[in-house]
Length: 431
Image 1 (cartoon, rainbow, N blue to C red):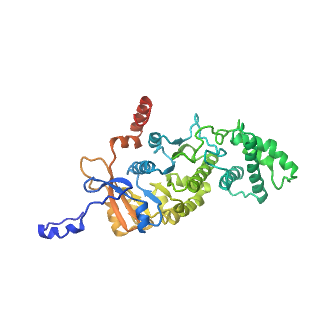
Image 2 (image 1 turned 60 degrees about the vertical axis):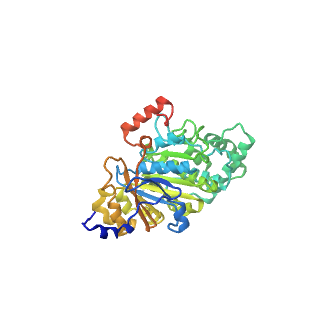
């Protein structure tokens, strides 16, 4: 910063322009930039009421090592403690520690323990409504038809009828466990007869082709684990869920199916959990999601989530994708009134394009480029720049306790040591 020497009397005239950050009544705890004093920053409620922002959506960006994971973990932990339902799609394992800490569901894929769901299960307090049926139809059609391959009206009607009759069959046979295996059995035995009695022609609905294409998801098939989970079933009422998709992001079949299940899960939470806040955080997974043809869902989510007391948060460090992606520019940035930006000095040679894409003012640019340039010696923290509606611009410290840091760390040596202690002492908190 530029400085100059002056007299005390003249210098005192500038004091009315200086202040430290004021604390809101509630929100996310950060630290005052100058002194580290804890302050609450309300990112969602007060700004909406005052008209400072028109939605609660977040866009978070920063270079590698800038502290994105720490800031996002801290924010999600605070929101969880305030009663929010948190669903996170991650590539990289940044949220494992927090998920273990709060006792949430953590879905990941490995050869020994592959990722499992059960979209046919109806949890406590849930019902087979139109939305549930539509989500199952969408899933089955996506598994049956390839990208770009259209389905006919008769095929849609036939699958809809199969789902309805399957749940009637379950009601009459309570010993049958709802899952893809029992649905497949129902199609082979009972629904085949319905088709024959209805004299449905093969050109209108080819049940044999459907069974053949879906066979890999049936018991004994290559993906028989995917839709037949027997645990972690009640996702609607679970408040903290993380989907770690790093190992399957290049797998066309698995990634596409899992993405559809996640999207339908969040829409179900969004519409059915009245009065409760929900947040969907997409951390570095948005590029892979967009490639699976789910960019339409991202657009839909950002436009409608506000009406359901929801938050959509997208996190990225890929500045080139940020500048070139039409989804990011036209949807995410335009419909995210709150931008949380971290140290961007690595991108100085691309900053003009970044500034234009983010719509940063000259003042915002100067504040953002000052982040982490004059941190207090002896203190371990990262600074974050928050832009709310282009009107309220602030820089805060994100200064975590040692316990918080260890729970959220993404450094592999620290992470493994924490996991070892958690296993040794019985819980993440004790570890």
